[in-house]
Image 1 (tube, helix red, strand yellow):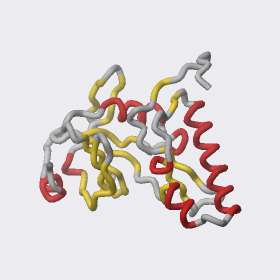
Image 2 (cartoon, helix red, strand yellow):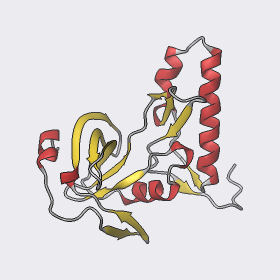
Image 3 (cartoon, rainbow, N blue to C red):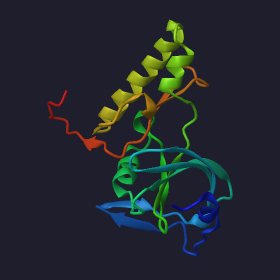
Image 4 (cartoon, rainbow, N blue to C red):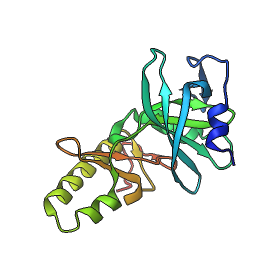
Length: 186
């Protein structure tokens, strides 16, 4: 497995403004020299996610999540879904994809996982209701954008309590599936 130090030392000379065609969808390409990994934020069945910083073309630095698959292969499905969702349902915005190693670079979503939120507010109906409302809105937006999440559970729901009303982010969209307007799936 590649360490954070090794990943931070990778540098490419290619431009970050190029795009790659994967499955008919142009995905923005980023270079590792524009990224700095800060810490590991989690590992799942398919990959490892790191909290990082992306230096944008104008010199600004923004917080990101960099997701690298265990297989080392490109994760174009999740990148395409994020690209098409364009933030619907609070899904992270896609900044782009990298190569060598392949990674998805997406918006860092501020907040706390729903499981932790529910533990903290176990007996507080007011806060739980606000989180429920935010989740309901996010899920409706996600479905309206034409996708079913397919892996929705408390670890894949982030609640941001710094906003009023609360904001919900649906994350880890790698196995999401397209739904069509005339589907009777629900």
